Image (cartoon, rainbow over all chains, first blue to last red; front, side, top):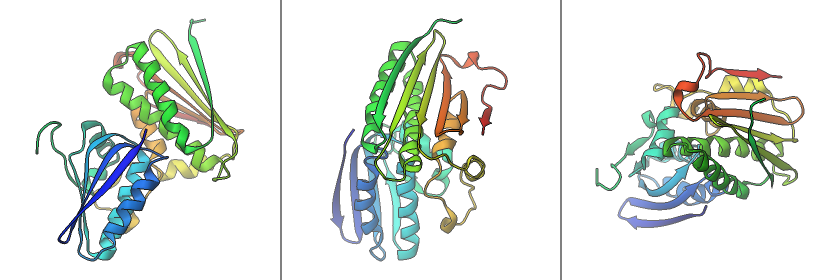
Length: 110
Length: 158
């Protein structure tokens, strides 16, 4: 029921490694870490969701606001390595059409 | 009357308890023999209903509690989630839900309001009663074939 987030900064690229469960309790923590990265001009933000085992609409809310922020700051947002269950939530809501998602098959590397 | 077991849970209307209910939910669904996929769907639906109650009904005052009832039948599970916080404008909420349209400009994308939509997408039957506080009643059958012709319709009592 916890969420851990760590940021790896590279040249004009930030990778946010997230693990745990994204829900009403943990989503604010994710937003706090993710939004500042999208505010850096031309930054490429990648969110690695490989170890996220649960996500609901509170997580969608965070990624939508991050996406909006990238448009205002000429940065980009890509979600990586989503587990099937997490990807499904994006598909049901149609958000997979709006957010760039590179979903690897579980256990593989794309 | 059909025999069923009933499990009730009462939690403070605070986000940190959503995960606790999720654990209870997967325990009950697992005991009933739901598939892995269905258990995950149930977890999302229950979390969405509780998140709604926490964020809308009580407006961050940190007051109040939420009651969750699980009706365990042979072939289906009924879940009731009730709060006694403020009611909300049901029609307005209904108008706002739905999936994203592919050509919708990003500036117009909603950041919230997906909860009810997901509940409806993931459960077999959903009823929302909005008279005193909000009561969400949802059902999921153990196998898809049990669903009636109009089983995925949603009825609303205002």
